[in-house]
Image (tube, rainbow, N blue to C red; front, side):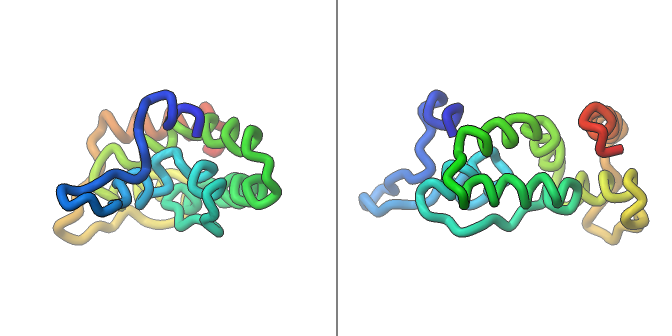
Length: 134
């Protein structure tokens, strides 16, 4: 979570009444904060990315459980672009597109979901190839 701290973001903030409120980043571990939250005592993660890279997310959690946070941060950074692309449009549109690319599911969508944009599909496909997932 080095980059989270450097950016000056705090996963907790105060609301107008002075109560601690978890930020969106803390509530969504796929926004590059898994190792940070686990260093604070979280016991795992519910991850959209685990649909695409399950072994890598399991390894990330195991590294955190073993207290190997620098290695976990490196792994998180490696997949940062993919994770960001999985949230480039309304969830679950990008993850369904990625799963379709990997042959894990069809691309049937029901409203209000729509197809991923061609631009984001190309970026997602390129990243899957760059990481040797596809």
